[in-house]
Length: 165
Image (cartoon, rainbow, N blue to C red; front, side, top):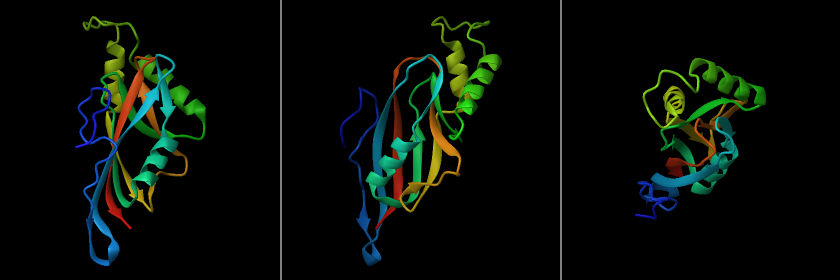
């Protein structure tokens, strides 16, 4: 196995590849795992991590397969949404704040209960189809780390699996 990232439990970071060469020079079952580090700047924000995901998928050499994106934090999540208009991100964060206010009848004593609830609403993982070595996103779609208890140093774990040429 490869190294571990920041004391977290992710085995095989950056260097895992179980490729088997198949018929015609294609490899089958290739798997690459890596960590993207995101430093957030405010308590709540949506950080566009699409270009980093594209770069990492291209570096993996996987041409067709799937990327699993996982956020190993309880007050942050990942989502896919519009990347063309930054007002969409602002609107999402503002609506989540109305839906789950920072203060309320929370029993958790750390002062970030709203962040935990918002992370549940956005989710901690996604799967994205990889085709021709790129994430198959719609024209206006982007991948976001959703921060609900920042600013912090966050990690997003990605495992790309599929075929290589």
